[in-house]
Length: 165
Image 1 (spheres, rainbow, N blue to C red):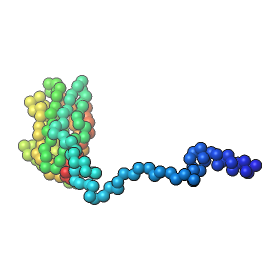
Image 2 (cartoon, helix red, strand yellow):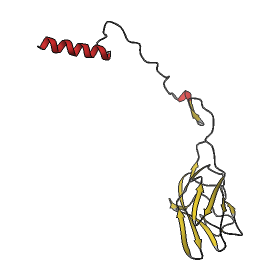
Image 3 (cartoon, rainbow, N blue to C red):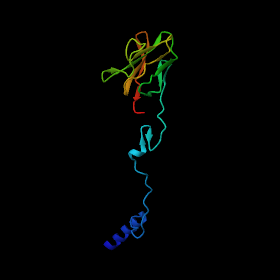
């Protein structure tokens, strides 16, 4: 009985290719090892295409809801970012308010803005450009649609500030 079990197991192993000890198996084609020589600051393996950068965040207001594109913007350190709002109704405004990160309220220093990390867009001011970013990292901010002092809708997008390219 044990001889029969051994034959069945050998047949199963042979059908799976594990008992082919007589014939050497070809090794799968391996990719070259990644070394410091094949890496550079702009990519891995010699790919020199930069990561696409965002220049503008568009906030669209539709039926009391907000859509922010891109939801997570990517910029380089020392670059500004613009915000534009579309579709505001009379009396509505959008507030952009960065959270505090490592003692800073957002990556953009105060410029034409009375406060660091805070912008207000309304019917008259439908767009704003920040100063150049002065710190790298991920910065979460709040976009709040308001009518007077009433909050209508809010989203929490972010900005990634890269300093390595």
